[in-house]
Length: 177
Image (cartoon, rainbow, N blue to C red; front, side):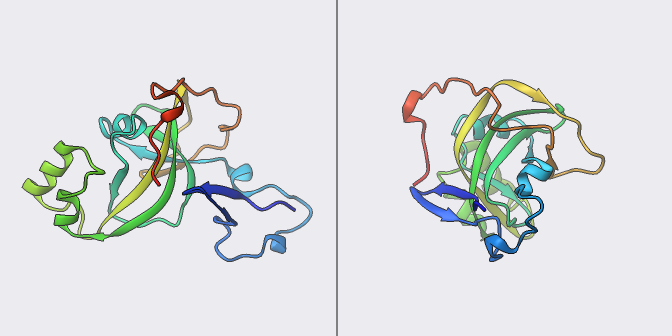
């Protein structure tokens, strides 16, 4: 049975989604991974932040809760009913202080200025660290489940079959190291 392997920071991390579970602890009758059973996860992000993330201009997405999710994540623009691209969620930082965000070059200047002016957006504030942004060649419609606010499952979306836009950065697309 194969183990999910993600290439993060240039090294291989096996079983990153298994949270300590042995690779052979799944029932042998069906060898589908959790992602194959329920599809990739989509992170709901408002614009202009979704566009900044997919353009590589914003590598921290600020949230009020941490997450255990790591690996490929689909960026869904809130209110559009469409998925626009993917990123890798590589880690979560926090809880963060106001000064952490104001000084963070990982956030666009207007967002840092907003935090300086208005304070932290959440009582406990976390940064989802994102890398390797890729736009889809065209937005992909999905069915939004009732009640989904932050995360959405996309069971019909096969990330290996999706067409991606040609990067304006060619082979030098920015990556976190």
